Length: 114
Image (tube, rainbow, N blue to C red; front, top):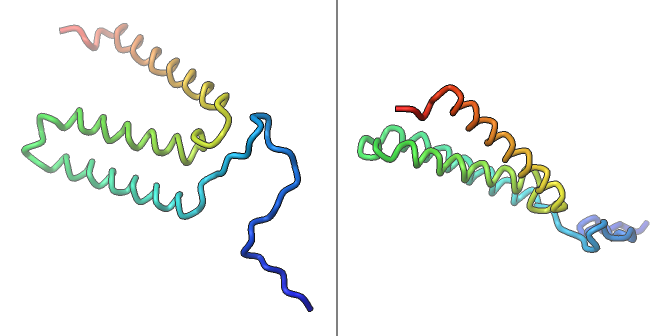
C-alpha cells in the first residue's frame, strides 16, 4: 500500500483568475502574527490612557493606533491586500461616503463651532 504525501501543496490545473496571475493568501501563521500585533497595539492604547505625561497627546495617539488597527484588519482579515483591486475600490468608495456623511452631520449640528 502506497502512502500519499500530504505535506505537498495541491497542484491546480485551473486557469488563473481574471487578473491573469495567482495571488497567494496569508497562511495561518501570518494571521496569528497579525493578531498578536493587533493585541500589542490594543495594549498600547490601554497603557497610553493611564500615562499622565501623555494626556496632551492622548487623542492623536488613539487616532493613530485606531488607524493602524483598521489598516491591518482591512488588509489582512478582509483580504483587500490579496484580492482584486475592484474590491478595494468599492471599499474605499464606501469608506469615503461614510466619512463624508459623518462630517456633514457633524457640521449640521455645529460640532466644530466655537
